[in-house]
Image (cartoon, rainbow, N blue to C red; front, top):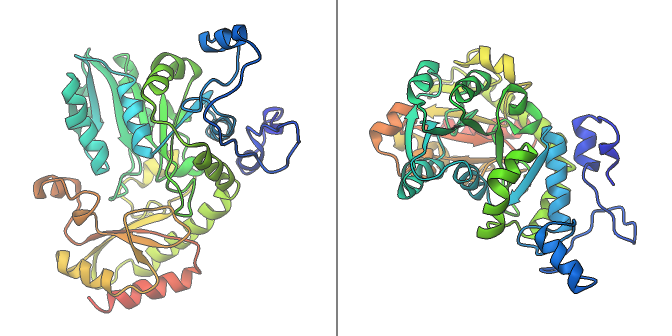
Amino acid sequence: MSTSNEKNYRPETKLVHAGTLRSQFNEMSEALFLTQGYRYESAEDCELRFSGKIPGYVYSRYSNPTMDMFEQRMAALEGAEAARSTSTGMAAVTTALMGLVKQGDHVVAAKALFGSCRWVIEEWLARFGVSSTLVDGKDLDAWKKAVRKETKALFMETPTNPTLEVYDIQAVADIAHSVGAKLVVDNVFATPLYQSPFKHGADVVVYSATKHIDGQGRVLGGVILASQKIITDHYHQLLRQTGPSLSPFNAWVLLKALETLSVRVAQQTKTAGAVADAIAGHEKLARVIYPGRADHPQADIIKKQMTAGSTLCSLEVKGGKEGAFRFLNGLSLIGITNNLGDAKSLITHPMTTTHQRLTPDQRAELGIGDGLVRLSCGLEHQDDVIEDVLTALDKV
């Protein structure tokens, strides 16, 4: 049994101890259970487990000791009653939304979404008769006007990808609850260390565990967190029957990675803030966006619901796509890739990668200019990261 279940330990302690299950060998490091199925003591025991009348593992598509440890640790960290792991972050988002709706229902979401999330809402859900409305996430009146009696879910990323807009979780949660809908929050960019959506009224929180939770570019994973009732009523059977399951090996990697999450994120945040301060006002840049700076457009909301900035900052290079490409190609330390939250500093050009499926007008509406790049700061010395950015800017 986890010692963190016996006392309300602080997040750093929960990240090391919460959810630990030990075998008969009483190992210190969490065990990796690579098994598909489980042996039953009798046919009667098998029947009772399958019917849910007694607890126990049945099949690793939806129950496994290593997965359990990861889920329980995430739930303890997030302050949730329950959690369910998934194979990827997008599996978590898709399941979180599909579990709340049926044909004829309606979803409202902020327009500023990762490209795949927007596709799920606009195209995938529509195939099953679920309509959607996209709104400016900053505009509370737009959220209010969009909801209707058929609305069952509201969805937002905050901070957003890649413009780092921050939305008022409590205000949007109140709007959702006024029509009996649930608010789903993608909390990846804030991490569970800097923002607690449940404290501000969210009903469901999702993560791509591929990002900061693994944080070392190794495995894919996702997690859905909610009350036990929401998990039972909306997600248990969907996950059990459709199988977007996290592998036990990936669950073990993510579980061990959680032990260092607070240390990694703290250093990455320190570097991101230092980079943003070092390049703010640079003659080659049209703007710098960082949630930890006083000049962020939603600084008042950030102060209310976040405890620190982010490991990411975005910068708009003058000269459009050509200027951005000159900058990217001038980097030597920072890697060009579409991942984030890694131990290595990474950078991407959203117009041609994560948001390339959007039309030019849609990107312009979201503030994703041709010169915008998203920088995810790693664990290198912050001065080396700053020097790499400044040297590359000289080449624009």
